[in-house]
Length: 252
Image (cartoon, rainbow, N blue to C red; front, side):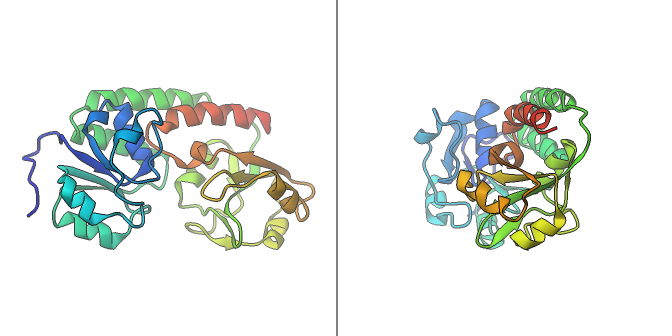
């Protein structure tokens, strides 16, 4: 039987979205988080007390039913549709869809409103926007952002990562593609971007991969970057845009 909360702020929340789990804690809702995925790793000093209910793509629905949360937070991209539909049969499910920075900011507001901390959410959004205003006005550079190897994968123009790149005046050479297209080092060489960003997640690129890419893109600057700066939305945006501003000045 589906739990009805009568529009009251939830006292028990299961989050299946790592960056939004961190957001809940930073909005002062940590004590209400009763379930999370194994990929929900922030805030590191507090997250261990929260029960793990599987992964983003394979949540343990039986464990979630045992918890009986008043709210489940999911994401259209990170979680499977069949799992979301099954959860909707039993619980109040808040489905987020984040393809750009503005949608990420709206999500902070929506979760804050739904969970009874709207003013905290508004304050956080304002602080993020202040950080965003500090982006250096550097000359635009063409760029490619790599998320996987074997096969090589990058990001298209309809992703949150692309939106972050665009904000930083990094022109995505794969902006005509959608989602996370496969590519190759040969194609990357033909695109000839000014800079290639090798992300720390989901594939953990290392120094050796810089050398591998350099064999094909000898005139391109190749940099290892923290994937959380580009792909984690929510409260992580505060730290991310501060770091991104420094990074953008460094590669100008």
